[in-house]
Amino acid sequence: MARHERDLGLERAWRRHIERQCTSGLTIRDYCCDHDLAESAFYFWRRTIAERDRQASASAPPALTTPAFVPVTLIDDISTPASSPIDIYLRGGQRLRVRAGCDPQLLAAVLALLEGRSC
Image 1 (tube, rainbow, N blue to C red):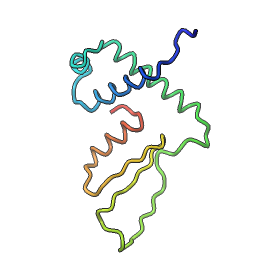
Image 2: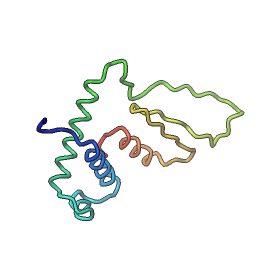
Image 3: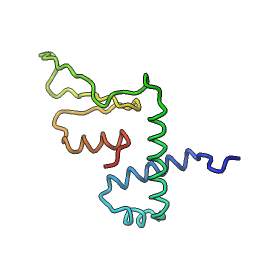
């Protein structure tokens, strides 16, 4: 048996903790205290997950990578109401639907989380 076999369930749980802490407004110490987590484990998993994500993105074939920004063409279409949502498709296949009046800072924070960047 390999020394460091991946436990995907455990990794998913830590990914959720890392995302929740990032959006909670709490320090890592306070978040860990509130959720009965070892602070050292939090830092270990944050580093491990970041390394795994870097390795996965580095090993992805060039044809599967998506540029961070793609050209957008705006069409002045009178038949489309001004409050129509905008769909943003992310690299991992997720779709984010944004409605008119969305807070730009909130949108930036959500996009950073979904793309796996630190806040």
